[in-house]
Image 1 (spheres, helix red, strand yellow):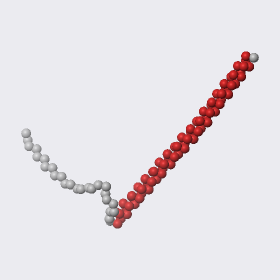
Image 2 (cartoon, one colour; image 1 turned 90 degrees about the vertical axis):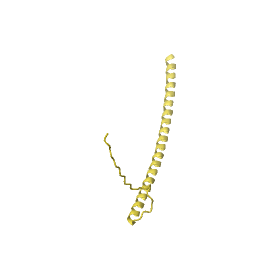
Image 3 (cartoon, rainbow, N blue to C red; image 1 turned 135 degrees about the vertical axis):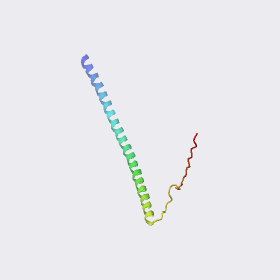
Image 4 (cartoon, rainbow, N blue to C red; image 1 turned 120 degrees about the horizontal axis):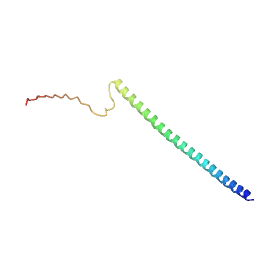
Length: 95
């Protein structure tokens, strides 16, 4: 009789553990799905930003090549460049 009671208790404990494992697996699946969705959205956003950057870069390059082909620059350079000639006269007096 004692063995039968002990077996029933073990079955009950095993069933509880099995249910906990199942709950944990469901949680892990849901969490994995959530992380995968967040990663996908992040990558989509990154890809869109990269495509926009590439399009803007190509448009900018096309504008520069068109202005150079016409001989006129329609856009200002990002900074001014001036040529300077520097003359240094070095005279070393003997000591």
